[in-house]
Image (cartoon, rainbow, N blue to C red; front, top):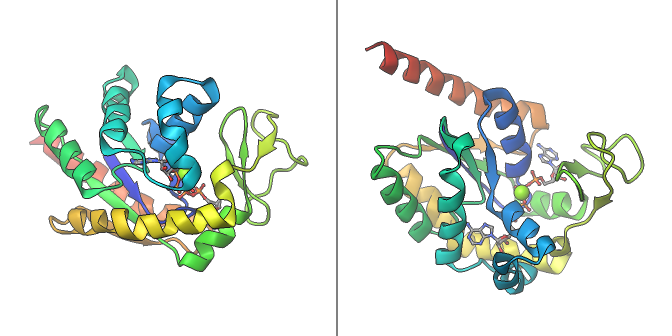
Length: 225
Ligand code: AP5
Ligand code: MG
């Protein structure tokens, strides 16, 4: 299963990516998370990316492509992956298709999780993340049981440095200018599935899962033939 998750900052890509990964046992790959981990570790990638991410700008295409190409050849990706936050430009989308075609593979479905800009800003303002395992919470919709600590691992919850209102608005503008065309890119050949993201997390996942079940059925018919 090779999937792409698109949607405004705060749309719920990370949240849905985790659920798909849990149910289907394929890795959830968030380029944003990989970059944040590299920044925290003081790695070369982090040092190069930090100036862009802190301003809400995209990192250069070559750097994003390098991150993804290195990740999707890891052994845990042999049965597929869920890309979250990649591709973010049409150049990245085309390059990924070309790279996969060399191995006879393709992105099978791209989900566009749709929320309004106002909803996105509200979610980003109230998001909290686990500093240890990266789990995502929301101060109202998806609260941690303990105060300021992660339910799963007990790690301390923090607010992402690019989650200030000013940077979030910049990220939304960047999305509309540079990433929204990617939605059309996948729509052109029927790979795009639009999902209403302004509903409870489980309902959003039920819609995504409906399309994934169709994919599983198609794959098993293909194998039987
Ligand atoms: P990235 O980390 O990908 O950030 P983003 O796209 O801005 O998306 P977010 O992570 O903010 O939101 P999300 O959609 O994952 O929502 P979430 O599930 O957390 O990228 C960060 C930066 O890295 C970029 O700005 C760029 O600089 C760089 N970058 C990354 N990839 C790149 C690339 N390919 N090329 C160039 N640069 C790149 O949910 C949000 C909140 O809402 C949470 O609190 C959650 O609990 C809550 N929530 C989720 N679903 C629901 C629901 N259904 N109802 C109510 N609340 C909900
Ligand atoms: Mg995310």
